[in-house]
Length: 403
Image (cartoon, rainbow, N blue to C red; front, side):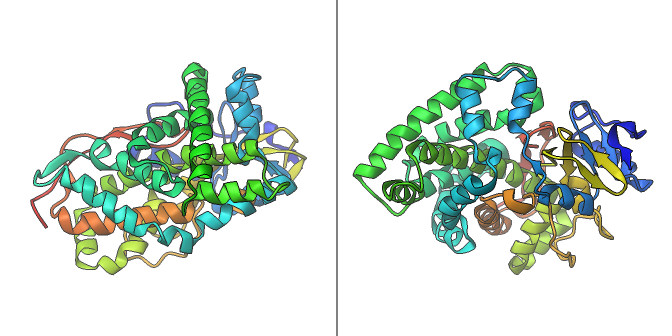
């Protein structure tokens, strides 16, 4: 066996200006063209193919390295560190299974479908603020408010709190962004403190006025005694806020960017709305908003003749894994794909909110396609970096008129 540190690997700088847009895809495609499945970066070894990615994501000797990354950036105490330690992503074994079992029923496909009427209502409200215009900056007009309104409904929070939920989600998610951590954590920590105070108040309100929502369900588990502590309840709600807003905003923005760049695919969706679920799957495949998912080896792992010592951090590249099959570089909503994506991860830490996210994206595309004929870019998109959540800061779009 060869130690991974002894390999002569190509290097990737995730902080490079090249790591966004088409240049980012070309760079990674070039690394895979010669059959290489590993690359190096300052913090982690990059795993570039699907089989290897699934191996590390499913291995019981690999865990999410939230605490270790926090240590690297000096986040060793205080509210942010306490939040990281409590995050469900950083739990393993029985505790992780217990927490997932408590919150999981709220995110089944059937549970997600319950919120579709609310999603349509929010989309209608937001569209009413755009029409009859034939252009907009899509992120601010729709992609940003839509998922925060949906999460507010799921939690049982007032609609007017949605902007604050978005702000907190965007900031708390930066605990996974190495560039944000390197630049300082004061703003992230402020958001953690504020959202904790908010959730405590929301729990008190829902206990006094129970409803048909996630928080009421979690409070029921807390009341049953030893299954869910109060602190665990607070942290699960924060996890839902942090993981369910910024991510869907980013994925919906990338969806519209892709369709604006491929007008024939947008017209196909307009002509055949039954392709909407497949269109969502294709967006998730082609432009995953979590291009790299980190794991740390908790014990020595051996794979393909390479030894990964305990403590080694690997980053699984969903972008390459998703594009591996024939025709994988093409954006085609009618293509017959095998459906195996790493966008939401794999194994025990598979994304809890995947079904809700798919439902939100399906409702958005089904709503927008008939209302935005001739979708086209109205200016350059401003793309974020890929080291955390790969989002879009600005997306000017235009269309031909009322559908």
